[in-house]
Length: 344
Image: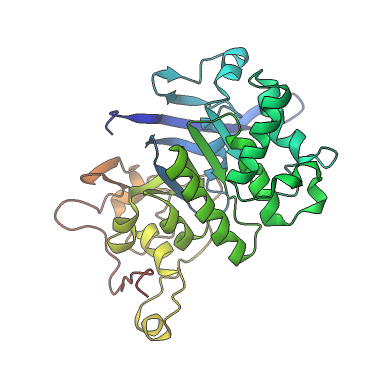
């Protein structure tokens, strides 16, 4: 992949967890939560990261921020390689990288006021104090659409959507270049989800922050993302721009995901074919040989069971890990009817 203008660059990232057995707790196996993935995120861009539960999305996000140290691979913030930096050196870079966690109820200290919560990062990093700190908190509350008078209230006095806005304000307080949104809308009502996503888009236009947006809702991911990466069992299956991913997915797993997106138009819904995958995702502690998706793939061939497919660029900007995808004829499941969910 090109390195030009990349704010975040992930190179062959791996995160394994040991399985210890026996009296001496020796390591017998490894849980391969993230297994050799690469991508990059540019300034002002949103990269959507999607996949089934347990596929390694959150682990990837945390490994990028060094909240969990990777087993192998490299993570670059512009020209800085993060995996080898000490805790103290990483601390100075925290103002450039922030995260919005999934649960708005568990991520805010119930004993602290909103002003304390939002201002705490500024105090920790010695950026502001006194009246300047107070003014910055007021500015951030207005930025995320909350009344500055709320700054004296406590988390239990707010709804889930309001708490998520407070978390966004806290993350943006130190003016980061990169923000991880780890399923920030999954715990919210549908109407509130749209408000939070629209807020994130508006903030990106105003301050130019880059997002890694982790989510399950493909229609919402398409709405907010510039490019989308699809993960399965710790591997990146496909990466391309949002329109291409829905209009012409190359990987059979991506095709099955897009076919599951509900369409509000009943006529179009009846016409298209749903792709129902058989079986369950394998355990990351005992992944299958070759392509990790081959036990559930309707197009499996012998090569899929023996060789790990290369994550390669099939078309400009369109990367896929599939033996059957090539320039001449890619791996299209027979009979699949793709529908533009925006037009539907």
